Image 1: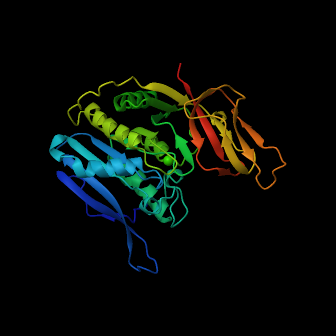
Image 2: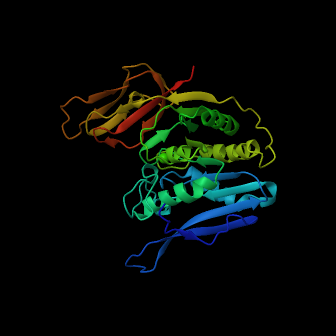
Image 3: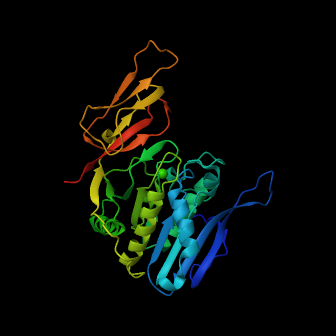
Length: 333
Ligand code: CA
């Protein structure tokens, strides 16, 4: 395997709390011998499992970035056994630019696994995560949101791997995280996903959507913070947090295929016909696309291809043909 160009001063095996950086060489006009300094924290107290928490895979998804930065500041290493590795802004250039893809190379980190050691900066980050960091982890949770273009109901998620024992363990972890909705991805729209890469390595891996629209959801942050405390207890790394006043059981739902997505049939301005959380039948209208440059033309109508609950709606008004305007999930029987 090609060695990564990324280097770091952190000692992954040292007890205590280290907050430092990964250095990714990046030679530009401003800085001939420059490096992109990507934050990383190692919190370790003796032997035990390794939990890896990731935020900022997409730079315009903020709840994970905030919750994980606070975790780094506030966690006392003595309160855990084992090791927590935290990266709140995995694709740092994208996080600093509040963009989904890196402003340096235009690459979406979450479509570029297993990465390329000698590729663009984003590809090099994916390679380092896949080749160096993921193999150290017993448990991975990668926190996402809808980004600029989508609004989401909050949910924690797992992804079917084809390995039943691994999926059972992930489902247990999802139960420990205890989100209001637990999503089971029954298919993978892209093999380059971070989650898919972690599953290929046999890692118990969770994801989830904790906000959207390029905004910050305090409810999403609270869900991540409370969920991490429960995950650490489940892993045997920390004492269980005091039980929440009224914690409802997780509603398990699934996304089974591309027919769960409603796509724009035209370019124009999208007016949604549904709200997040609404139940729809196959053939129901998801919204209308208006042609404001040709007002005599009737709007185009978009439909749902299957029944389910609306968990995601487009946030931006303008759309192009092929954009996802909404998507569904259905209850697991
Ligand atoms: Ca995302």
